[in-house]
Length: 319
Image (tube, rainbow, N blue to C red; front, top):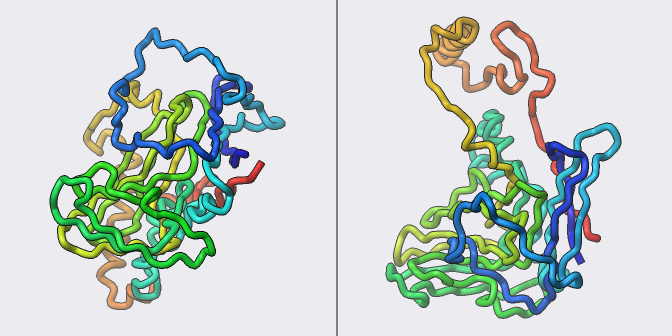
């Protein structure tokens, strides 16, 4: 069985093919988030794809253009275990709300639209069980003590198979019950949920070339404070995945220049900066706020047609 979601994809041709690896429920969960594969690294210019020796484990997925629109990119999550187990990780579009943002006066943090949009980028996996983790400060594999709450999901599992100190050094490893496949040239940027704060622990970022790699990856958190009880709660986001095509990044030619060389931007910046300075000086500004960016409005009052105020990503659809 596979779970699939389609997102807009830019490609040079309307039809693209890639191999999607199928795994049985007995497949061991993987070990790749910290790049343990000794063969990992930049792809050589003359690298060739491996032969498709077992057609029962691989299938060719064709990406085709839908109507007159852009080609679609397929993001496929293959379930490695039963649907009941996979559902505990709640793979779904990333949510807008954050507890600390809710706790700000009048929830004013949501007035920062770039924050709210970032919260919704990609898809998230949730913690399947509530637990505490305490690190003794050592590099030992048994240096983290886990205390799992009793599961209320009606499923009795050995949670140490999914949540462990796999790498030592106070790193908490979540073994995810999926293997992902993306379109050619696209991989997954794996990180903690944007703007999700956990005192005493930090999510580790990674980028995996999921268009070819045939092992699972893990999500990892680094405990930053020894001998502190770190609490993970069932349902909180532990991992965010965002498909990225980074092939052209090395061709970007970044530059700096004096703002005066961009006359219209210089003028707009001066105008808005003066307006903001006057607004901040107002004693009643706490009950009001400027909405230039929220409305997608430039200094001339023009509104941008493609301005984002929210994201509505598609949910994964079982197939």
